[in-house]
Image 1 (cartoon, helix red, strand yellow):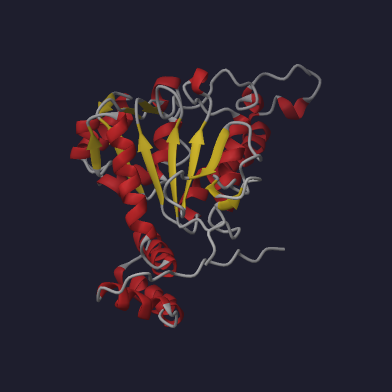
Image 2 (tube, rainbow, N blue to C red):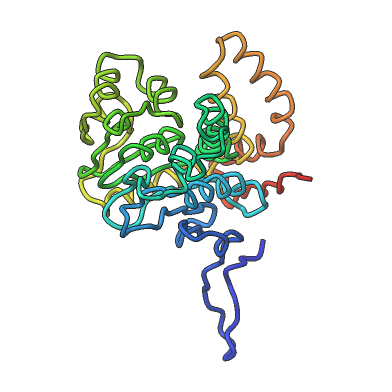
Length: 314
């Protein structure tokens, strides 16, 4: 297969140029690009460093759009590395963005009775909450694994977002916090549903959610929220790259079906999960990737898995 990253200069010699991801120019607060060394890894970076990557309404929508597309548009992506720019991963929801809480603000039109009625306001706001939930759920539903590398602050909505990733690693300076109770609300975009399923419904989990107290990288690893803690941010990048690289060495069909089965089994009984994977593998095992994988395990070199096709859409 010809390397698309090779091109000829005007003087003749072949040089290496960085490919541009199809989503590279689509977003304002996200940077989406191919990894500079790992050809099948796409990097998604939260990019509001001056705001500690606090998520405003626009970024929220962009996260959903990005993860609904990456890995499913024929971009060659087999794993996503999610990280934040600047001094921390994510400072939570941007409470200064009026668009996020517009429906909760008092109406300027006092003659509009529907805007004053609590039930009507509640039903109107529900759709926005569902939209915000769906944006983060897009990480779970992304057809390829999502690895999140966390440094510095990861609080509030940052924890909600991290919960949706498949694998979480962090640096020693990472600080986590389910801080919604400090703002007078219950977390409503995934933490209360996913966090306990990741680490268990322990006393410690409820303590963190009820108090809004922060917890550090050591505690996060101890309870199983992250799988690795790196000494420095440079080591964090290396460890995250290592995980992504290992994932992309395997059959993309096998990895995709494994993710589907793990997510399904989390919310269903063992028996239901077994029947589900039987159905999945009845077709997935027909792939030539199975034979290629056996050849690789036997020491064969230069084995390449074919790219996944773009998902069909209307």
